[in-house]
Picture 1 (cartoon, rainbow, N blue to C red):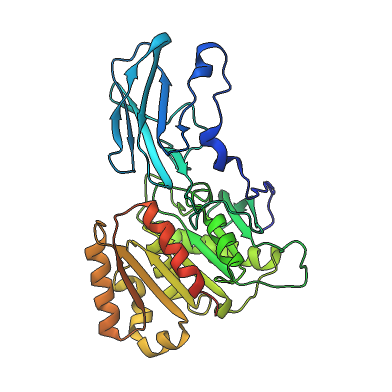
Picture 2: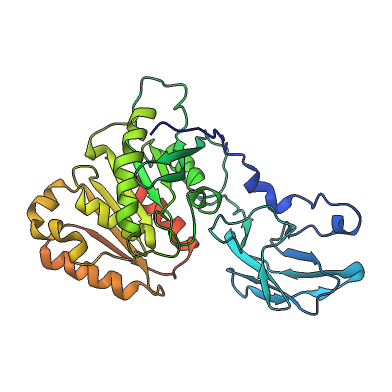
Length: 367
């Protein structure tokens, strides 16, 4: 995969971490619309300049996350909520029924159709996904032309602390996938995967590894029926060989994992179980689990499947709308006696749950 390279080093002090504390750079009255404005006690003020609006609301993931803004002077609307629990939260503003991002906040969740902003409230002490004073890795953004899909594509690659200095060392690789509607940037910008890795590596709880984050939307939006098959082609024919040639990674399946959430969980389970010659570590978070037909080969030879697997790790929340589907998949694995780990947790189909799952599975990989 020879391709033009967009080299963006997203160092650990990335602007996303401080976006919630950055004033609006506009002039005049707009300069007073700093939003969100996080106070030391974790109360948060949201502001919006909308002089012609009749109603403005904020809706967020945190507890009691819906609140009405009040009109102030110069067409400024504001409300103070909280204290908001530490975490990385999605929120939107609603102006006369129209849902929108917060124009005062440059931290936007990467999506195919962006509609939510990010509020990051650090914990005290810091949480596993917070920026901490430890050695940090680098995230590089790549553009490439996929011959398999006949179009331009993008991916992101995390390299661990010391990768650029320790030029003789080779690393295991994790292919980490997002869910439907998101893209290759979401696990970093919103999932904070790079900081989770940095912190776990610094604590000695996770192996240093290279992490590849692809755009999981391989098919056009109007025809999603063959998305997993097209994504599989792009991964196996284009991306995996290019990563092996471009990064210092170990080539054997025992040093390669594929993990994803929701749509990406279904992709990871399907592709991983169908290609155990490539992936020995497989994980799914709140997955759109594959059918029997989609993994017929692995099910037909369960003993061989179990012998090749290092780990098959599956988790879902008790309030997740995909829970029944995951339970059916677990029963199928039990029926075929394919070794696996099943984690039923609290939580719904949401990023606060998936950050926790990533922090749980990373220490299990490549041992």
